[in-house]
Image (tube, rainbow, N blue to C red):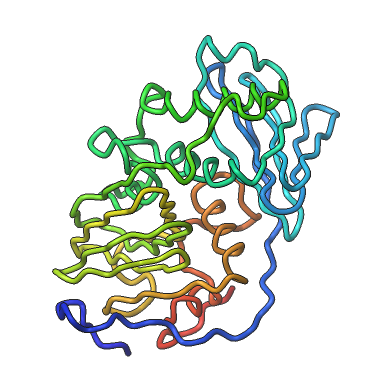
Length: 314
């Protein structure tokens, strides 16, 4: 078992050993959507196609496209095997009346990071005490027994929602640069020192961050992941342009079966499966039988180097 060196400021954290070359399948996913009068959804086909069934009609978003689902719409969203779609809830107001219909928009390379950053903010239910970092990671590391307890009001989400609706409107009209989404210029953020009741696997999808645990500072770069254990205070400072994602979270300290600080380098071939797990855990768009906040699958345990625990089916 890796030794617990988290109290030693100069000791290196345990890092995972090289992974076996395995082919991981992205499972087909599905969710039912009923948007309210004040909430729409932007469905981003990140990898492969995504489908929206409305009545007898089936709409398709190809990879690199988004489908705007307006308020007061009932539909079914699905993705086939080896596809990944990202749903973004968008709180609307009277200014969004110009988007009353389902429409397709192009998700170009320059806005992909901005959309993912908005995803972390919108699904994180911004918390008033953390205006810049009240995202999915701050929520997952919180002290709520219910990971989604204490959500914010639509007013707290007005800025990211307005930016998305303005971008959708501009894209639909062909005004490609009329509206911008934050990407490389996203502000730095801080998750203040806190002790949560859940253990979280935090992944630096983009950028860099400094994580302080028990007086030790861990510098994480893009592609690194770290386990934030329950009941252990931690402090996170993320550089501007950084996107931090909680891959999995589970109440208690025994998520991965070790006590020390573990930092893992996520290989490129496992980025999509990790992102698929993030979406399945934190949104209703998930494979049949997927249980969020449960035991992580074997491949995820291997990714962070927890080989000393019994294998888990998956």
